[in-house]
Length: 193
Image 1: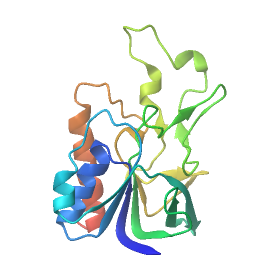
Image 2: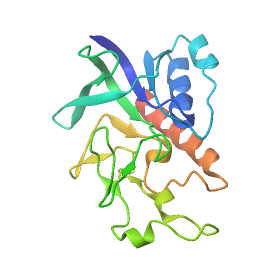
Image 3: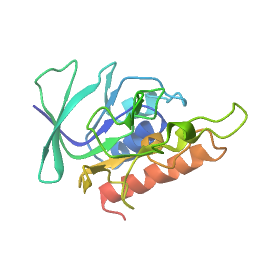
């Protein structure tokens, strides 16, 4: 078993920005990073702060109890539990595998979180020069960015960045919005909000 203050799932812009902020504030964090990010993060600052990165690894399941997530298990670590007080899901959208679409639905493959999307597949795509509806699909969360699982909030899990419903990474100001949002999540975890 390994114990951290916060476990961040996803090493893109949202995950790394939040991880650096928490690590600077004295938290013990680990970033689990597998997949592709639209914004190539710089891991050097996080590493210099003592942060740990599990590169090329992926979470395969979570352990839940009473509205909280207790631990996650990764592909490379097998049955070794990774426990934390807080978890951040910053796994991106379709390109990085944070969301998956099949012929019937769009879903979040890691925990099975509730996803907001248009049920009419005809609205998923538009002509190339128009806004693509699927870019706004994402995990449903409350005002504190805590996602829902079967209609119930996961109290110590936060959704950050592109994984969230309504966050379109192709919008001009998306990077600024994502960074401001991750700052707010870090403040909540640190008790500053």
